[in-house]
Length: 572
Image 1 (spheres, rainbow, N blue to C red):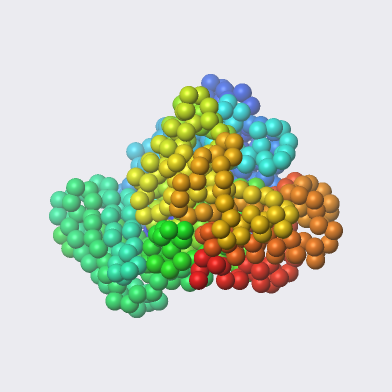
Image 2 (cartoon, rainbow, N blue to C red):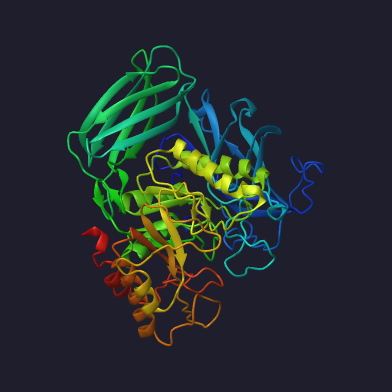
């Protein structure tokens, strides 16, 4: 590993050269009573050190403390380079679980709630010449029942589908210095049919007469350029490329994009980005990518690592997980019960890998009104963060929300979250609650089906079979694409530990036979738009991965790929 952990630029679709990585060794203190503010920990002494950005539960952090921590504290110093003088300085966090407050030189510079999304505090007014001190406190009361925690265990130990917790900082912390007027946010909506891109940039600190210039290229060759006036804090334009290179499964065709903000012809803020020509739509029972039906051969990816827990040890490890999946013939993944870091989506964009963006909704009771605002706020922040990623081809805020309770509040929560997601992003399909209680407002009707008998599966999914019949806790199927979004999970443990679904096969040959039978039944169904196999790797005690937890294949990847790559009925 590099001496500086995770040294790569953390936001690859929004790149500026003027930045400083704050990963590495920080002072650290566990605050079991969440009393650190009262006890003076903003200025007091800390007893430990930690390696950021790894959570204190992880081996890579150097702490490896696995019990509950009500709050954790971090401190380090930094000195800005000369080039940052006179600029606005932004403090960025990739993710901090759950409630984060930061102080620079003893002055509070911001508070953020939500353990899975990126956020920024401007710290310009708190800086002093020379050395500055940064303190961060993260409060993480997971057992209080009001915060999403995904697959983090609510018990001391890991159990069932719940694994080691993540507390505090778990993605890169970094500084960036910008001009008084800078590009704060960009929304990009591609139109694959017409070879165009609609762009809406939000400008912070804009002044009268400012312009924004966008220059697009492909493999170094210029494609188009446009300049518009900034109006009302926004610069809006449509770019039309000379040569269409469509993005799709296995075809990560990306256009480079340079954005330059100027005043009176003098360039100011400049950033590098990229985009793709990719459109997602639904047609009857089919999901279309750029107008063509694509059967989604997905894997369930939970994004856990034995040494980093929620945090990949290296950028290469993120890329490798995608390559492992593609080697077995999968064309995408459900990014399950976790908002994955932007660097993962960057590699998915480059490799042409289909991803469903999810929220870590477990831990939130959808029937409790107070939890909706907490969940929805963070969920919409994640939708906004990843809006421009071409690899994200759909959204799913909830997973396995069952039944009805509390005078219909659970159903109302799902309905409102679905509608809010569609309002935030009308360009992608939305599943309201994967495998759970569909509230009659979902773009795709999906189920989780862990049946292990191949003959039952073939009968259940044959052409004309009455699929998706109502069962307790689920709504009636009302039409539209159908998706088996979890299946398989076949138990196979190299050391006969842990658990998986069904009775473990007696041999690798029996495993491959069962895998082929279940998967072929889904591929041959003319009524399905895709499947998602559980899962890419083992995670702690859950031993149903196609790879071990340390990323070794349990079966020849080419044998799994031969099954997955068969043409699906719906692709005819």
